[in-house]
Image 1: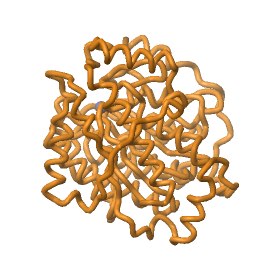
Image 2: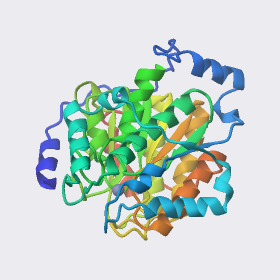
Image 3: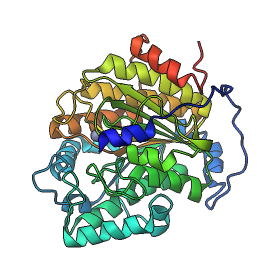
Image 4: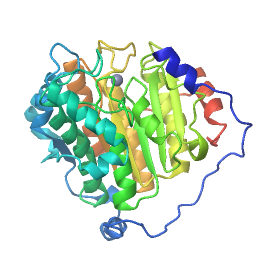
Length: 387
Ligand SMILES: [Zn+2]
């Protein structure tokens, strides 16, 4: 399956086009409903960077009802994180219930036949594949996972907080518009990004996916879309087989998919180098109105499913880069849980991320190495990375 998917995605490139350069922010009036609210709120409060509201943590008990049996993606992941958070007063985050996603939000990404299939498989307890078991509680879990990501977006773009974290399961970034796979039923972050565009009238959303696996589902949702820049750092070659550096998107979305593969064994220097020297400069040029992080923690060295070498503090440094970028652009930034299968590493890394998103701090700066040079050359077909 993986090789077939790769073969489909890797294709001859069109001749190089003129590079996109830094564009001035266009401050057109927002198109959608709560419309102007979010920009007015920013002006009144002096911007997201000065927000005094508590950061937000979205959860739902349905996340614990998605029974996967003896499977790495299990309820204990959430229990471990929340046990640790309880001991530290939730790091000052305000805890909120994740609502169920609306059909309207889901159908902006998924097909009706996929939503029907998810419902039918969950009701019957029939797994989608060996990786993706479901049971009677899985549909409600999935609906609240996607809905939590949307509620996070609503709160951030409504000016209620500068940052937040959605800790629900199942994860989402492998779920394609018409297909469940890889532990994922609904494409939570893709649904949330679409919701930001449709319901809040924002023009551009950046998704940084630092889960160790390529988010083929999110990528598929935005393959031909210029309003969402999907940047993924992932171990390569690896499951699910997609995410080659040469795949930069298609049609009007060409250049707005940023695949940043790293080799097995890559550690903090490599991952931070890619964030600092590739993701941040491109994001600065893209000038998103909202930053969403697909926050998987399976690049941690203790993770049983992958081979990268990050520590909990490495995720804090990546989150500090996100925090600094969001401050610079004066936009909110939220994170949504994806993978991470060592419960101790997951809890420590998620908490390090939450602290960094809320408090910022100086991210560790690294020298660009050979990996960054190679990726910069690939990304440079569409973006100017600066000096
Ligand atoms: Zn993963």
